[in-house]
Every structure is written in C-alpha cells, then in structure tokens.
Image 1: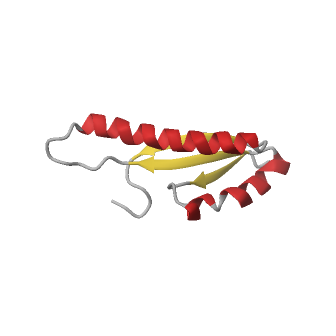
Image 2: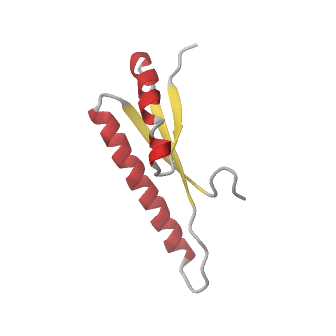
Length: 92
C-alpha cells in the first residue's frame, strides 16, 4: 500500500501547526501530499448578513491554508488546502 495523502487538521494555533514538521518528514520520502484541512463556521448574530459572514470565514480559512501550503511548497513539499464549512470536531 502506497501512502498518497496525509491529513493535517489545522485550526490556526501553534499547537496544531506543530504537526506540520512530523507530517512533512513522513510525506517527503514517500512523495505524499499533505492535505491541510480547516473547518470554518460563521457566528450567527441578529441583523447580520449570514451569507456574507459565511463567505468571509471561508475566505479567511482559505487564505490561512494557502499561506501554510505556500510555506510548505518552499520547503519542497506538496500541500493541498481544503476548507470545510461547519462546526469543528467536538462541536454540534
């Protein structure tokens, strides 16, 4: 079995990003892609445009993952960002 992708969930914290080093060490010799995943969810406030808020949080998450992917690319790793809309793990 060939390992093609390694899932790396990120939330923007230094603790989560600490997983990038070991994931990169595993991916490099295998030629695997790091699949960078982040969830995004807009808070619901009365009187706000929910669609606009949703678009904003997704764009922010895409920008963050794009910057991480670019940084990994400069280190010779292939990273693919993926943003999922909805609550993160452990939240309903």
